[in-house]
Image (cartoon, rainbow, N blue to C red; front, side, top):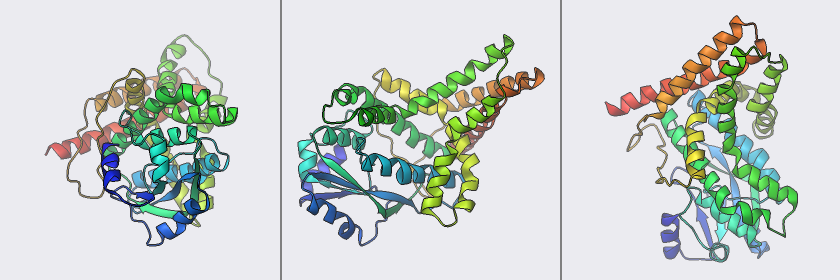
Length: 349
């Protein structure tokens, strides 16, 4: 937020285009976005869709691409068309300078300065447009540590915005109940990581007390954790080779489970008012700096062992309904912990 505010003081013009350093917009980007702002004086910003420069580099980047494609091709498209508190994603967008000023400018009290400004602009009566056919490709994090750092920052920032704007959003008289509920739910989306951890932690005592899980728990877990329909739908809409791309869905599911401890901790820190510095995400094959694995790797390893114990108990007691989640935990936590430990060792060397 501080860098954006400083840049705005030096930038000229009525409109301001914003890109992270790793984005590679097409030469036609402004010609395809500015007309929307010229046609509607109450349009505050135009958001383009993110593309991916290195989606095919690994299962990690391919899984991230699937997640971001779903966010833009489904979530962003719907929330903009339905006017459910549309938002700017922090990059690949154009703002009207007057909208930024009217909404109070860039504020540094959250780690999601983009969501913070977007929310204030919507509450002030400004409209947004999502240009789904304008694509600005960028690099995806290539390491587990970089990805975890990015997701934890987004989790903390979104939760900070929730605590900051929950009351103003709920009292917003010019927005429908559906729009207000959607805004609150989307800001609290990372809390699902805490619920996932809670669900896993209670399974061991439940199994010891001879509670019988329904076999339908497997189908319920797949539907609730994987969101397979939306992920596949986004790939079908955006890519002709969607069948080849969706084979990375299992990797995405393991990432979603494996990053639950770091994201959950970020949510808790935000809820209790803890502050954190803005740590940028290393991009590209070679980084100018490296992230450390930190203590979270031991939490992930402990959860992998706990999941293994739950899985063993479920199998030995014939409680098949309780098998799926601890299996995911064992694979997800174990994969993330092993990769983070290996990358941390390499950075130390």
